[in-house]
Amino acid sequence: MKHASSTEDIPSHGAVPRHVAIIMDGNGRWAKSRMLPRFAGHKRGVESVRAVVRACVERGIGYLTLFAFSSENWRRPAEEVALLMQLFHGALVNEMERLNRNGVRLKIVGDTRRFEPSIRRLIEEGERLTAANQRLTLTIAANYGGRWDILQALGRLAAEKGVSGEIAEADLAPYLAMSYAPEPDLFIRTGGEQRISNFLLWQLAYSELYFTETLWPDFDAAALDAAIASYRSRERRFGRTSEQVEQSSRAQVA
Image 1 (cartoon, rainbow, N blue to C red):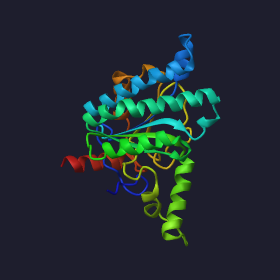
Image 2: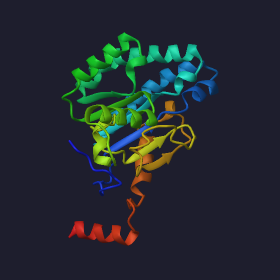
Image 3: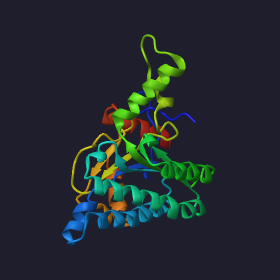
């Protein structure tokens, strides 16, 4: 299915975002404030993932994308990276049946070649098990980077069709890691930081950005509702003037 490009078309959008993308930040600080090891914050963050997945299903959000591990996170201390890989492995084992029962399709995007074979196998099994589900598409970005995504798409395009002359968006879009999903309507970053951090660089072109001081382990359905309320207050112009947006709204009502 082809999805509208926000730089070439006016994507359909409503009071509830169709696609929410989240950088889950603040696990370590949550743990530190409680005199706990950083890993305790990451474990508590898994509970927030469950809560937000459930909230998205209940609110009719079709796509949820979570930035779990960036291509730059390998720079963290080796012990923490190893524990994060264990947590990822455990989540794939423990959450798959629950996701499937609740009609959630799982997708993993990123360069998975660096993961252990057992993790790669679980990714394949989880995606295959949930492939037909339609209530929510949950994408986990793991060993993902926005620049990597664009470069790998260019590489695949060149390998399959060759590159000569000018490349259009429509040429490249099918090769991006998330070509199966519409562009995010709402981007959320928890933990107080206000940057995109190499996440979905192509796809966030016209997303509404929402930053909150709430640490990820404390982010719940109410926090999601606050982000959606902020989203609803925005005027989404996609390069147009306010007058054009108003005229378009009147035409749709008529």
